[in-house]
Structures are given as C-alpha cells and as structure tokens.
Length: 329
Image (cartoon, rainbow, N blue to C red; front, side):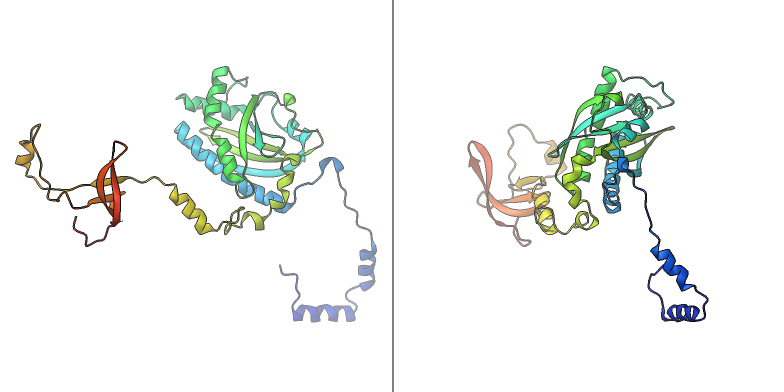
C-alpha cells in the first residue's frame, strides 16, 4: 500500500477532524507515550535484513551446484534447497544439532577463523548407500562413521569447497578448504558461546530420506566482508571487484578455451577400387603442388594458410596469412 494519501483522502481526513469524528487529543497523548522495544543482548543482531537476503541468494547458488554434483556422483535425483538464513548465538546452534552428527570443519582463507558444514547422519548414510550401489532405504542406525566411510564422504564433498568459493565470488575471492571432520558438536569450538553466528539451513532429499545441512559461520569471521554484503554491491555484475568490465571478463575466459588445430597439406580423390589396391610402399599423388601453402583448420574451420616445415626436430607450420573464401585449397 502506498504511504502517500490522495487528495480525496486528505480532504476526508480534514473534514473528519473539523467535525469532531477524530479525537486529536487522544492522538497527541498516544504520541507522547514512550515506546520501549525489548532487546536481548545475548542475541545480538549483527546481520541486517539486507545482509541476510544477499547471503540467502549466495547459498541458494551453492545449494544448486552441490545438488547437481551429488546427483551426478550418486546417479540419483537429489534435491537441496535453502530453508532459512538466520543469526543465533553459537551455543544455541550447538544445542539445535544432534548429539551425534557429521561436522566438516573448514577454513575460509584469507578470512580468519573457521566455519563448519554440519550434515544430518541420515542423509550422510543415504548418500554413502547410493554411492556404493544401494537403494538408500532409511532410517539408518545413527553411529560414528568408519574410516572407509570418512574417506568416501570426503571424496564426495571435496568439490563443495569450490562451489562455496563460487557462491561467494560476487563478494570476495575466498579459498575454502576442509581441514577436519568431527562427530560430536561438543568438541567443536568455533567461537565463544554468546558470539553471533550465521546459520544457513538447507534441506536435502535423496530417495525416501530427508535431512538438514547447516552452514555455520561466526560473525567475527565474515565481519571484514560486511560492507560488501549488500544487494547493490552483490548485483553489480557490470564490473568485477578488480574493475574489469563484463566484455573483458568474457574475453579473458574465451582466450583460455582449448581449440583443435589441424593442417591439411593437400587432397586427392581415389576410387574404392584404388583404395582397396593400396599396398605398403605405394605413393599417393596429391593435387596440390609442393609450393602451394597448406590450409590451417581451427576446430574444423579454415582459418590460415601456412608453410609446412620443421622446428627443433618437430613438424611445424608457419602462418603466412589469413584464409579467405576464394583461396585455392
């Protein structure tokens, strides 16, 4: 609803005041009353709504990439979606997760401090079941992972650090890295109990199994990036953080794309009978003169004309000029 009154609404309001339908004295009394809003210092709000919106958008990107990767690895349809992005005291986060869970501790270089990726054991066992060719039929008995299971889950989740870095690329260049794995949250000491942490909760569906994944990052860890956690900064796709334009970024990526290069020194035509009669030592005469340039193909398209030779005991071709459509091949 618009906060600007129309002219008819203004006229109606003034008429009601003049006729005594609205008690102006009570309105003045209400405005003089002191309005107090309770504030819990143990639950300090360090992230604004704008911060949380940007963080949600970033981790939705992370969830999509992780779901695509795991679906391919497990050869099964897997869904991951962000359920909530909230800020809570660290001790509240610890109390909210199971006593026996799977905690992946990671560093967010160059940021100081550490973050944690917490996964419900049910979804971990379901992924391991699928990875080993099972049917992921839960529920599973909750227990600690064996050494083999730890190795397998690390193999599955190692690319997640690259997805997390990509999700944060619009804000900063980070290099997340898994450093250890824990099962008891009481042994996890990311920060002080009353410190505010960012908790991104994602749901994971695999087969009939459902569970939650939490990304917990202390406020002190990402505090240097707080000024960049805004829609205006994050959505500024026209220029990167180093000042390069979008066209320049595309060109830089394109220059690193590998292409197939072939050199055709000549061609001829033979009948099927002549091909069947070929034997070792036979000579095939090409229609092209030895003095004619060779055609250089880039990904199957003629691009240059060159001269064939040797360099450092290797066959080589020297580019003479660009290929033109009317060049004689």
